[in-house]
Image 1 (tube, rainbow, N blue to C red):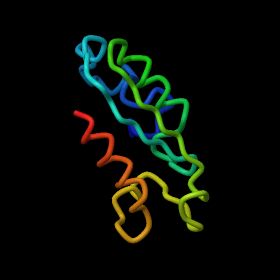
Image 2: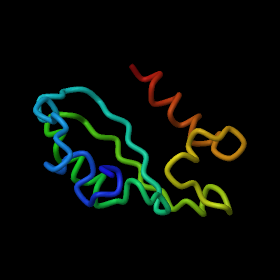
Image 3: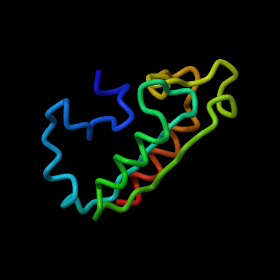
Length: 96
């Protein structure tokens, strides 16, 4: 499973075309959580490094600081727990 590989989507064995990553020249908002088993910090860093021209707004969060039960990989999308992060996301998007 590519999501659990230490190289994330960049691992050659998954044959994902990443040839355009280095040319991507847009702002990117990235959230990572320390309890995410699918996208650990190391994988996110490698992904960010592959986006050579993108302006990365990197937010790596200690999940327990947001919610006592953590966040994990999919928790960002749960309305009951993560409204503050959504508000940050909306404010980021409104800058453009």
